[in-house]
Each structure stands twice: as structure tokens, then as C-alpha cells.
Image (cartoon, rainbow, N blue to C red; front, side, top):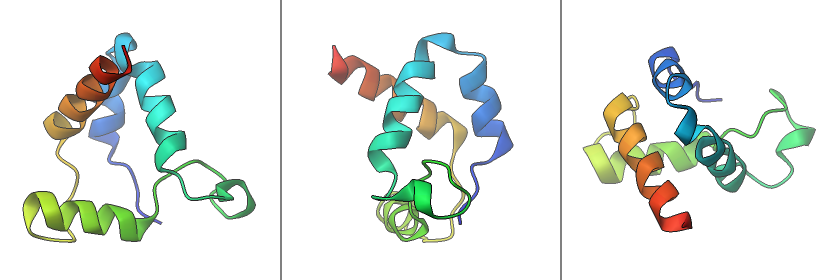
Length: 81
């Protein structure tokens, strides 16, 4: 399982306008049947995150950049309107 960096969670937690978007995206990116497998949370599959990191940063092991996550969630929020 890939872990969400604490700094990303902290950055989203102080932006209440992104909470519903972050929750919605968590469920959209979670693999089917996530509730049957530990950690029993709607987190994206590690392979998916590695693919996204390769596309964005050129390295499948690159950690999430807080500003990139915030920009992504803001974009998702705008698109949902």
C-alpha cells in the first residue's frame, strides 16, 4: 500500500473547501472492492500511483508533491461545478 504523506493530509485539512473534493476523488481513484482488503480505506492502488508519478515526474517512486495535489484537487473542484 502506498501511504499518503502527512504533509499532504495536513495541507488539505486546513482547506475546508477541498474536503468534499478530496473525499470524492478518494472514492473515484480507489480500486473496486477496496473495502474487502486492508487497510479497508479508499486509497488509490500503488500501481496507479506509480504510473501517475512516472507520467508527471519521470520516476515511479517520486513522492507526492503537496502543491501538485492541492492544484489537482482545486482543478477537480472547478470541473465538478
